[in-house]
Image (tube, rainbow, N blue to C red; front, side):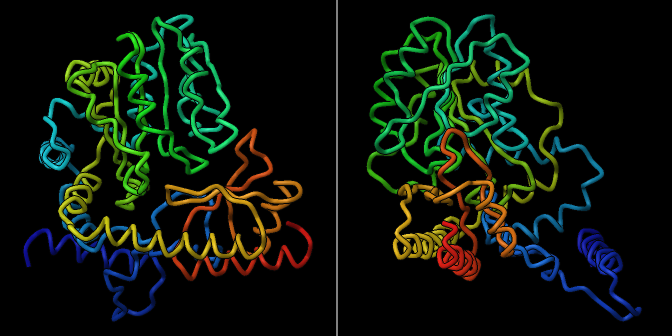
Length: 378
């Protein structure tokens, strides 16, 4: 057995001991401690976080075990092949890439790099909360623009007005979290094409693999010609690596260099790099994730249609549906039935976001929802 195999076997044995397996002959198989699905050890189904229920790809699991031999080392030797493989996958240069501990770190870098007194930071409402959270220590002027009344898209005209023609940071989460909706990429492109270079567009494409509407396309086409466009993506969703924290930004080389000045040193760990490399090499992984997501979405929409509960058509791995009654009470009732559903997203407090699990987990959610309807709660 080589050193990597020896170390991996040792980790399995250690985990067997930690798990309380009794007797010297007890052995924990490698696969048994990779949890698949969203069901927690106590039986609760966690549909409150936009995680991929399939878990790490088998090849990524093996890569993590094999890489543990290098877990005592800094990640220099692992980052380089990761960046090279990612650049090849995207058809960009390595100089276009900024690697983060999840995409949220790249968002944080951009908020830090472009802050200045009175600069408008323009976001939709509701949208992913981390960008306004990162804004708080800085002297931005935060501009929250409600989504459009029909389609729940970014209201680009009002966002344009708020940004003005001077320095600004515009955050576009597309598809949007928590609504799962797409804002017309043609309209976003039109604004980018006309905007002054002082307007930075921070385009969050965390869910771009899930979008299948002609109205949507990536903003990657701008990175060579527009230094004021940063496309942010993640390994958390389609590659099921939310817990390993691996994301990236794609931008003009000069912009990437500016962001890198705000990066935390050694921010990408060895095991995340190993899992990322293996996941990108798995040709069937994206399709498996999309197939599972489609099945889960079908259960959700069929149930909501059956119960007459309005929902927003989604281009992501979650769906937002209307409830009747108090949201916090609804969340508590679902928790009592062993289902964790999404948190409030003001101002949409008559709606709840449910993240997709495995089909059998979505059936448990559907059963709980039917029970609440029968009780007159929703």
